Length: 87
Figure 1: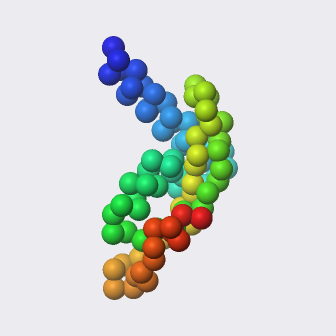
Figure 2: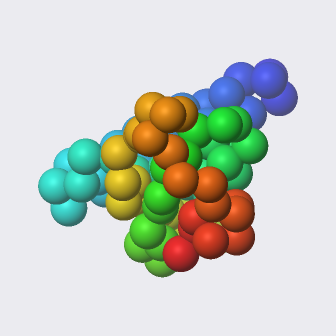
Figure 3: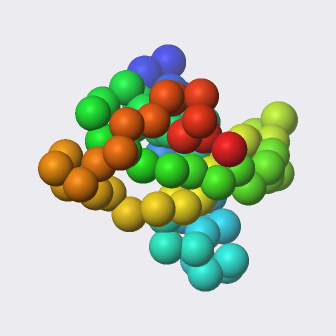
């Protein structure tokens, strides 16, 4: 049962983030955890902090980001520190 609760919470949070993105007409929205995982890869993506958004079913608001730039190919990439990538 605990496994179901954990999965259900993740799915519910993802659905609520998707709902928020549709309402605000934002094509890519990510939570803090997703942003951290993306920044651990070699991809150069810039995110813009949207702030802490209340999410139905969660006690605490969820910190959300939108994608502020497209992915670039490695040949065209300009090096950037992780601290500089998240605004």
